[in-house]
Image (cartoon, rainbow, N blue to C red):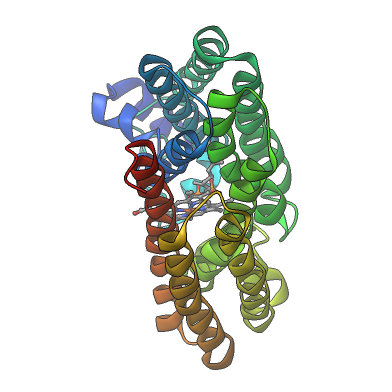
Length: 304
Ligand code: HEM
Ligand SMILES: CC(C)=CCC/C(C)=C/CC/C(C)=C/COP(=O)(O)OP(=O)(O)O
């Protein structure tokens, strides 16, 4: 596994710090995952005890972090080569791979068990499926095999609002599928925009990301197609009546900006627009879900 005995010694020598375990949870990316889970929970009809609600979000957070950790354990070989990832705790030699594996497995098991015991079995099953999807379907199977890796495997990132919803209602409904659909359609433009300017890294390690396999023009076309599919799905909660006017107007306005950026990227193909679209995609999903959540809170307080 290690290139030399010197590298092996590094693992024996370094004592991981608390910060390294925190970094293994991919905290920045997972914060948005947790937030979308919370909004799913707030939107769901019915009542949930505040302690149960807190436990459900805690379980989503721990599971998201644990699966990020297992992803880093499995990908340590390629992470060590890519500039963007070479300083992660495992490739940098701060945490031994076996330690990360144990940490990820125990946290995954604990989050699913706690969800099943303290919230409900359906939410626990969905949580287990999400972890399994990210690790087995995306990380271990598709990521290194097909440029469609993130379309199929990326579905894992779309489950959290559905898990939040199911934590309250105990079953999957059409509304929770729409929330799933928003993130499912959002993921390809989010990631392919990044892959347009982080393409060299993936090429170096032989990960078949779309720009490496099919070229930049095809990637830009796919980004535009998914963006066009995504915007109507984001408007659906308003049309279906489980989100209000404020959300509807926000979804139309922010979706318009998303489409304008995707169209500019399609035409001009410059790195600057790719970067803008990537960063905008994160702000976009955050604001969209924030408005959904705020509206739900206002409705609960009888203010809407
Ligand atoms: C398979 C699907 C996805 C892929 C391949 C992907 C990939 C990436 C990559 C490579 C980055 C670059 C920065 C980093 O490594 O920290 C990133 C950033 C980010 N992603 Fe994604 N992502 C995916 C899905 C998601 C989902 C579902 C969410 C949340 C709902 C999300 C939220 C974020 C956030 C918040 C950042 C910025 C993190 C920062 O500030 O460093 N991503 N994504
Ligand atoms: C509740 C629960 C279990 C949630 C999991 C949510 C989830 C699957 C999010 C995926 C987001 C993500 C960081 C993908 C990165 O791809 P990558 O791992 O290929 O990126 P890298 O190159 O930065 O490692």
